[in-house]
Length: 136
Image 1 (tube, one colour):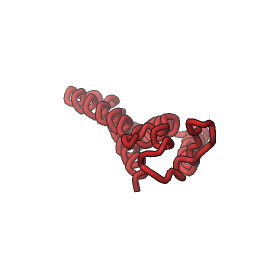
Image 2 (tube, helix red, strand yellow):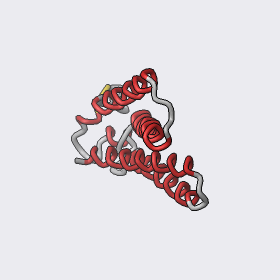
Image 3 (cartoon, one colour):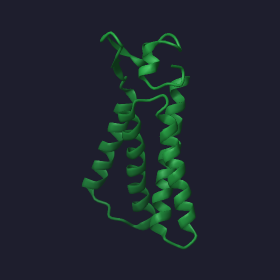
């Protein structure tokens, strides 16, 4: 599935974003290069995901995985505060990410007609060009 590759890149990028946050928080001398590498890898994964996904969806999911994951890791590893409001807010972020994942992007063709990217039938059609695919 062509669309799944973007989701895979976002998952890997989000995990690298969490790793970046952990290494930045830990602060021993050796974590600086690790932090820089994880941050660069995370942004590279976002960049790769944007080839097949709308920017709003990709960026929201990427930052959501990184933010919610970093908050959970902070609670578990660094003993950061745990409150019902904080955990509830993290749950809302998670539900929002799932909702974004199930939504289908809608765009417009060159003649103004609406389309769903999932209904695109040919690699060379205008729908894919609008989706910033390599197949334009």
